[in-house]
Image 1 (cartoon, rainbow, N blue to C red):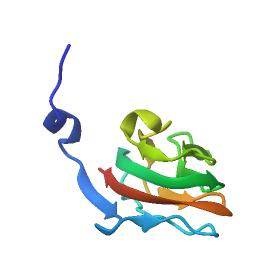
Image 2 (cartoon, one colour):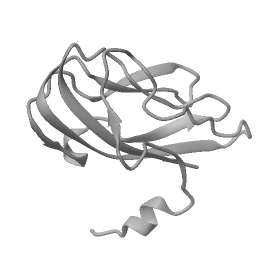
Image 3 (cartoon, helix red, strand yellow):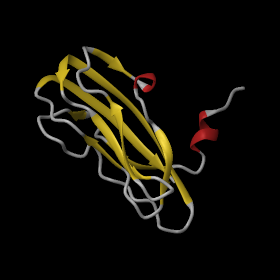
Image 4 (spheres, rainbow, N blue to C red):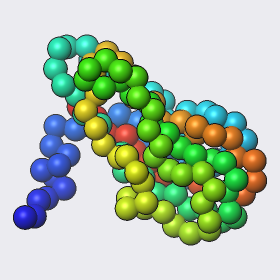
Length: 130
């Protein structure tokens, strides 16, 4: 069975993005992009993330996580990109949790969940939602 990307993204809109220069991982835990809050309209909402990460020096720390509220009302934090990555390009197949259903009125946040204490890496990311 095949599908088109336009069928997957139909109804979705770009909600947040890193600059074209990317998000350089840091010794801290900032948000990668501004949080997005879907409307509190009694409907199901969804998000999908498109991303790639380039690691040039092995990372110590630097985990990226997504925090959201599921449809049952539970706040969930999921690892998106692992800490301690070795040099290379990491694309969609490397990321553990890239889409989901979320509760309206509650933010979807993508953050650097653990501080980077050694190494260098840059993340490019788009957060799409409906």
